[in-house]
Image 1 (tube, one colour):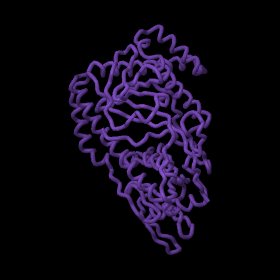
Image 2 (image 1 turned 90 degrees about the vertical axis):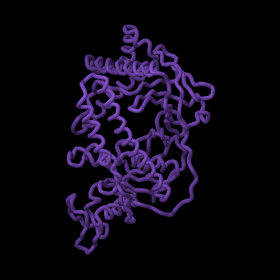
Image 3 (image 1 turned 180 degrees about the horizontal axis):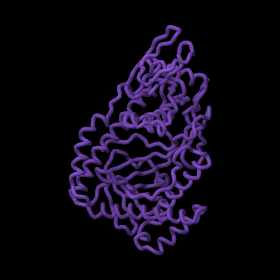
Image 4 (image 1 turned 120 degrees about the vertical axis):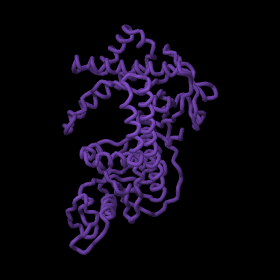
Length: 415
């Protein structure tokens, strides 16, 4: 029996606003982003030349960079420290992959050439009294930016704002506030329903009751427009202003598709969690699945990771149980008798020797639910210490997941 633990966890939420300013201010933001990228790459280079150095040595190297380069010294010291942390994070991940003997690419640290954000800690910025604008007070000359959005920062104390990011996207610049707060749990009445989900390419998911959610295929739908914009880019002279404009228009199309996919995953996940007390799903390794070049585009277009992320987020917020189970043989086993019936991807109907005939995905969804009810899996409802520091992490019940996403973005408004 799986029981949800009603502990209110602390986590980092991200509130995002559109930043409005002058052209000169946007250029200053770009300069700050390039500086953070420069510091990160210099730290990676220092590590390559001096294997075995730790984070303290990288901080000392950052101090030397600030003394040597005036443009680095002009950026807030905490923003430079964050760039060092980015570099060390890549190094630590590489060492961790080596210790775990991760197959394939170990993730050797690489230089960044197109960073899109710079992150400040608790200094270098100041909010206005009405919380509708923010002033960056380092020597980069960014100055005061207006905040356009629907969030109200008056609900949070300044001490809760741990980081402030400036993000550049194809459609403009954004300010993100990383706020440490408690998850606002919503009291909902139990529905008495449980469900297993089998995600797919043909259908977004099929549940254990036989319901199928259609796959919107946002990338496939927008592919014609993407090809048109890509041709416009290829026709422009490299380095020209017209080429930069064409690249920006192409980026806007990509950005729209990614936002559509995220909002769809969020909406569907909320509906599933609200309608059920327990939701079971597969613990899929998306990184391994996309190695199949025949299916990579369709898998990425489906947005399975976003769907799982929002399932777990709403599971915590609404006090529901989410369970990730091992995906092996869920499509091959018969949900009626347990026999293994080998199938290729083209076989969409499960036909067993016991006489049981069912849609392939429906059969898999039933198997996923059975696995969850037998407590084989990872309980995604988070069990956390409210006084713990750092991003929230899940407690593993079956310990089959190596990692669990802990820090979640709260629902974001449209801009």
